[in-house]
Image (cartoon, rainbow, N blue to C red; front, side, top):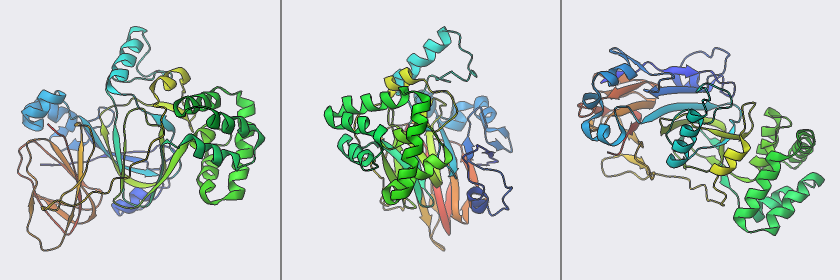
Length: 383
């Protein structure tokens, strides 16, 4: 079992206080957006045996277990994060596995450098993800019903939004959502900037359900993503609640602290709230144009106290233990690799005592007994 030393990424949208508060350290004044735990080559966790990438490369079956290597290859197939949003993240969508492979092979064939700003596919993998709230957490997830979106836009009484509301009412669901998102992303930039400015003022005036969009526009003035965001469901998670985000589902995180886990991929297609490249044709190929229920996950404890966040994919499995003081240790030994993360209290994991924000990597079949009092997240795979 290896204690992990993890990198904190200073993205501009990150909170300046949430991660320091979790770790019990003084803020630096700079944004601290994500703390990465795992073997992603961009920022692998460090162990007493070296970077986790190198530890796994030296003996994949010993560290990951033969079943995981057979199913996913000689790499850790998930990345675990603590995510602290102090401002809205980009409005984005992820490809499914087939789309990712096709897109990656196409860009490789065309000789687009892997670090090019206009490159969409950094690898050939999909990127399903799960976010579990540690604090109250706001996000956007999946399309609203088109008629509900039309009513939301129409009530703002902004003339340039009326054609979008009419389109949403005039066509079947898939066509309505596709036509409006395409129109928003293809609109004249100057005219769209004016529309967003008027929309932001109306949202600020009305408040209530419109307040999140006024805040988004404050952070991204004139950005067409503000209008695209109004087509999506707004979700507010309470601590312990989670969202699963599958392929093709447009989404954005707005504010809050959470534990995020995802397949080990960098494939992101953006549609707004960002200065980065937006590839409209490719985005429209990947987006699933259907109204969806965000599907808030609320796990129930099993007899041994494990609370599992059920998802339909195998690259990761996230669960939580709330460990009471004085209880007998839980045996978490498993034939697959694990990362154990403490988020509250003090958790004993093997020979390690974990404070909030601290974590360990547990190789496959390594003895793993844990005790509290504290809250522990367990990340592993289904193999």
